[in-house]
Image (tube, rainbow over all chains, first blue to last red; front, side, top):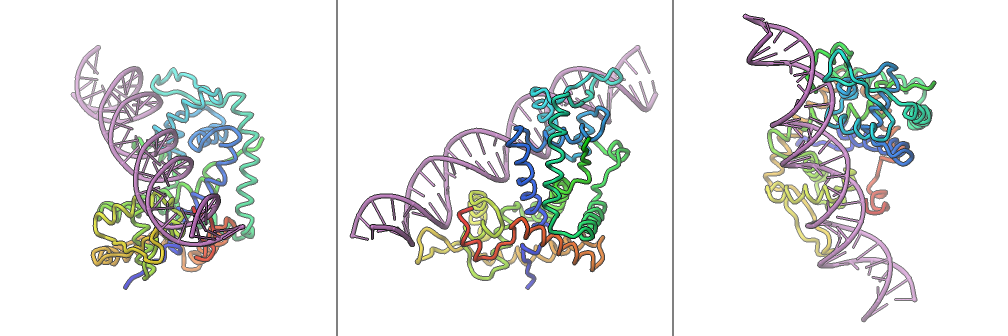
Length: 158
Length: 158
DNA sequence: GCCAGATAGTTTCACATGCAACTATTTTGC
DNA sequence: GCAAAATAGTTGCATGTGAAACTATCTGGC
């Protein structure tokens, strides 16, 4: 009879680990700044890419449902962490960017999150870390999770 | 200025990958048998461990909230995939086990899920797969995710 | 130019899940 | 032995999220 040990089953392990890591990490911005995971993803996208982005773009590159992004954007606008400018070329779309306040928060947060990431990976040697990232990349690629912006554009609305 | 590329940030990558893997995998049992992820976790635990288990135990070793397990158990009982027997030693607790129908479903499902897992990992060589699992194990251990049943017992109600 | 279909973003709805309160039982301290 | 605390499991409530419907705008075919 075929058996399956959940504790050795990769999908389960990934799910459990991702949940744990997410909880450990998000406490950093939830408790301190009152922003949740979708809001963090919006800020992270806007902070990393210097030019303004559409909500659609953020939705695609963070793989987060557009309604979730829409709600996060609403909240961030309310708290003046981001602002949006009309796009004269296409009036359906808004360009989003960090406000000065949002940029300050972003710059405060990033080093702390990077430190936390390093802490979590500190149980691996430099080589192990590199190999782990590579393996992750291969699995992502095989599941078609690596999107260039071209592919993102080609894809139907997510 | 510190920057952070979400696409290279381990917590985000893990979250995204886990979600994708979970969706890809759960379609196997959702579409065919109408059972959801928590229900699958109950079945997987009961099928793997031959002796009957309590809901509490399943909750701990799958790291799933006890109310979620409770609802999954209710549903599985309704569909006669599991049954529960009173525990004379402790009448608060019920021992859960697969029914014949549940065992049949389990035995049908397992090979297919294992095959899917292998498919997902087929982009890695045998050595890479082993190293990946080892790295995962180290991160889990450093986050205190590896529970023996002793530790589970020692831990407060989850 | 106009109409059909596509697209950006919002909102409504249904549903899943975590938390906290609850019931029923058992264990612990005295 | 009994009262207080702990524990197994259930349930009500609040919340977050995805699907789908919706509005507004744009694009392509003709």
